[in-house]
Image (cartoon, rainbow, N blue to C red):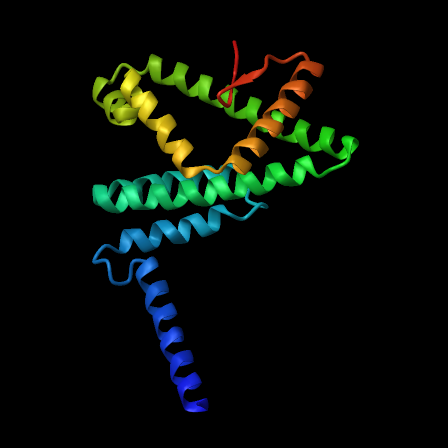
Length: 197
C-alpha cells in the first residue's frame, strides 16, 4: 500500500514537471513561447515602473508575433482567463470593503481607466499622424477593422458562455459603484467598460 502511494506520488510529480516544461515552451520547438511566459511573469510585478512595463510589453509583443497563430490564440485564451479571474477577485474585494475604503479603491481604478483612455487617445492621434501606410497597417492588423454585427454578437455570446451568473452579478455591482463614483467626480459613466463621451 505504501509502495503504491509512493509510485502515484512520483507519477504525479513527473507529470507536473513535464506539464511545467511544456507550459514554458521547452518541448514546443518554439522557445519564444517560453520567453513570452517569462515576460508575463515579470509583468505581474506590481512594483514595476511604467517605462520598464512598456519595454517588457514591447518585447512580449515581438515574441508573440513570432508564434504560430494556434500558439498565439492559446496564449491569448490563457491570458484572458487569468486576467478575468484577477479582475473578478479585485471586484469582489472592492464590493466587500467599507464605504470609505471603496471610495479610495474606486478612485484608484478610475484614475487608471482615465490614464489608459488618455494614452489610447494619444496613441490614436500619433497613429493618425503617421504617414507610413505600411507601418499603420501592420500596427492595426485586425484590431483596426470595425466588427460586423455578427462578430459583435459572437463575441458577446462567447463572453456569456465563459461567465457564470455570479460573475455577471459581481461585474454589474462593481460597474454601478464605478459609475456612481465617476458621477461624483464629474466624469461620464461607463458603458461596456468604456466611458461615454
